[in-house]
Image (cartoon, rainbow, N blue to C red; front, side, top):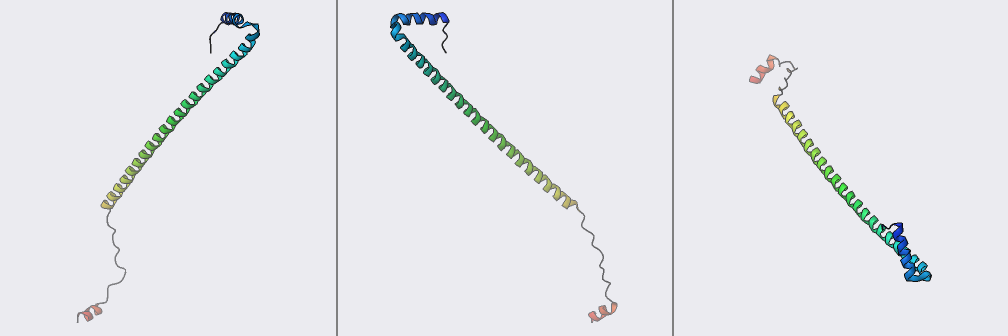
Length: 122
Protein backbone atom coordinates (compact mmCIF):
# COMPACT_ATOMS: atom_id res chain seq x y z
CA UNK A 1 0.00 0.00 0.00
CA UNK A 2 2.69 2.46 1.04
CA UNK A 3 6.18 2.11 -0.34
CA UNK A 4 8.44 2.83 2.64
CA UNK A 5 11.92 1.42 2.89
CA UNK A 6 13.24 0.05 6.16
CA UNK A 7 15.35 3.18 6.62
CA UNK A 8 12.36 5.48 6.20
CA UNK A 9 10.35 3.48 8.72
CA UNK A 10 13.25 3.64 11.18
CA UNK A 11 13.51 7.42 10.76
CA UNK A 12 9.76 7.82 11.36
CA UNK A 13 10.04 5.65 14.50
CA UNK A 14 12.91 7.75 15.88
CA UNK A 15 11.05 11.02 15.22
CA UNK A 16 7.89 9.57 16.80
CA UNK A 17 9.87 8.46 19.85
CA UNK A 18 11.34 11.93 20.24
CA UNK A 19 8.01 13.73 19.74
CA UNK A 20 5.71 11.39 21.66
CA UNK A 21 8.05 9.97 24.24
CA UNK A 22 8.47 6.36 25.33
CA UNK A 23 5.24 6.25 27.33
CA UNK A 24 2.79 7.34 24.60
CA UNK A 25 4.58 5.76 21.60
CA UNK A 26 3.21 2.18 22.04
CA UNK A 27 -0.38 3.42 22.31
CA UNK A 28 -0.01 5.72 19.28
CA UNK A 29 1.69 2.89 17.32
CA UNK A 30 -1.22 0.54 18.10
CA UNK A 31 -3.73 3.22 17.08
CA UNK A 32 -1.80 3.96 13.88
CA UNK A 33 -1.62 0.23 13.10
CA UNK A 34 -5.35 -0.17 13.69
CA UNK A 35 -6.12 2.83 11.47
CA UNK A 36 -3.82 1.51 8.75
CA UNK A 37 -5.48 -1.91 8.99
CA UNK A 38 -8.96 -0.35 8.77
CA UNK A 39 -7.91 1.79 5.82
CA UNK A 40 -6.44 -1.26 4.05
CA UNK A 41 -9.58 -3.33 4.77
CA UNK A 42 -11.84 -0.50 3.58
CA UNK A 43 -9.80 -0.09 0.42
CA UNK A 44 -9.91 -3.85 -0.19
CA UNK A 45 -13.67 -3.83 0.39
CA UNK A 46 -14.16 -1.00 -2.10
CA UNK A 47 -11.93 -2.77 -4.62
CA UNK A 48 -13.85 -6.04 -4.17
CA UNK A 49 -17.18 -4.24 -4.59
CA UNK A 50 -16.01 -2.55 -7.78
CA UNK A 51 -14.76 -5.89 -9.08
CA UNK A 52 -18.12 -7.56 -8.31
CA UNK A 53 -19.96 -4.74 -10.08
CA UNK A 54 -17.75 -5.10 -13.14
CA UNK A 55 -18.27 -8.85 -13.17
CA UNK A 56 -22.03 -8.36 -12.85
CA UNK A 57 -21.94 -5.86 -15.71
CA UNK A 58 -19.92 -8.29 -17.84
CA UNK A 59 -22.40 -11.04 -17.02
CA UNK A 60 -25.33 -8.80 -17.99
CA UNK A 61 -23.59 -7.95 -21.26
CA UNK A 62 -22.97 -11.63 -21.96
CA UNK A 63 -26.61 -12.48 -21.25
CA UNK A 64 -27.81 -9.71 -23.58
CA UNK A 65 -25.47 -10.95 -26.33
CA UNK A 66 -26.75 -14.50 -25.85
CA UNK A 67 -30.36 -13.26 -26.04
CA UNK A 68 -29.63 -11.37 -29.25
CA UNK A 69 -27.92 -14.41 -30.75
CA UNK A 70 -30.87 -16.64 -29.78
CA UNK A 71 -33.33 -14.16 -31.30
CA UNK A 72 -31.30 -13.97 -34.51
CA UNK A 73 -31.13 -17.76 -34.68
CA UNK A 74 -34.88 -18.02 -34.07
CA UNK A 75 -35.58 -15.53 -36.87
CA UNK A 76 -33.21 -17.35 -39.23
CA UNK A 77 -34.92 -20.66 -38.48
CA UNK A 78 -38.35 -19.10 -39.00
CA UNK A 79 -37.26 -17.62 -42.36
CA UNK A 80 -35.69 -20.91 -43.44
CA UNK A 81 -38.82 -22.81 -42.44
CA UNK A 82 -41.01 -20.39 -44.38
CA UNK A 83 -38.74 -20.75 -47.42
CA UNK A 84 -38.87 -24.54 -47.27
CA UNK A 85 -42.64 -24.50 -46.83
CA UNK A 86 -43.01 -22.19 -49.82
CA UNK A 87 -40.77 -24.44 -51.94
CA UNK A 88 -42.77 -27.52 -50.97
CA UNK A 89 -46.06 -25.80 -51.84
CA UNK A 90 -44.66 -24.60 -55.19
CA UNK A 91 -43.42 -28.10 -56.00
CA UNK A 92 -46.82 -29.57 -55.08
CA UNK A 93 -48.57 -27.09 -57.40
CA UNK A 94 -46.17 -27.94 -60.22
CA UNK A 95 -46.76 -31.65 -59.72
CA UNK A 96 -50.54 -31.15 -59.74
CA UNK A 97 -50.32 -29.05 -62.92
CA UNK A 98 -48.28 -31.65 -64.81
CA UNK A 99 -50.13 -34.70 -63.51
CA UNK A 100 -52.03 -36.80 -66.10
CA UNK A 101 -55.65 -37.39 -65.16
CA UNK A 102 -56.29 -41.04 -64.31
CA UNK A 103 -57.64 -43.27 -67.04
CA UNK A 104 -61.12 -44.44 -66.18
CA UNK A 105 -61.58 -48.19 -66.37
CA UNK A 106 -64.22 -49.50 -68.77
CA UNK A 107 -67.60 -50.19 -67.21
CA UNK A 108 -67.81 -53.70 -65.88
CA UNK A 109 -71.57 -54.06 -66.47
CA UNK A 110 -72.59 -55.52 -69.86
CA UNK A 111 -74.61 -53.30 -72.19
CA UNK A 112 -78.40 -53.60 -71.83
CA UNK A 113 -80.15 -56.12 -74.10
CA UNK A 114 -81.63 -54.71 -77.33
CA UNK A 115 -85.22 -55.48 -76.26
CA UNK A 116 -85.17 -52.96 -73.50
CA UNK A 117 -83.97 -50.28 -75.89
CA UNK A 118 -86.98 -50.80 -78.22
CA UNK A 119 -89.39 -50.93 -75.35
CA UNK A 120 -88.22 -47.60 -74.02
CA UNK A 121 -88.57 -45.89 -77.39
CA UNK A 122 -92.32 -46.59 -77.67
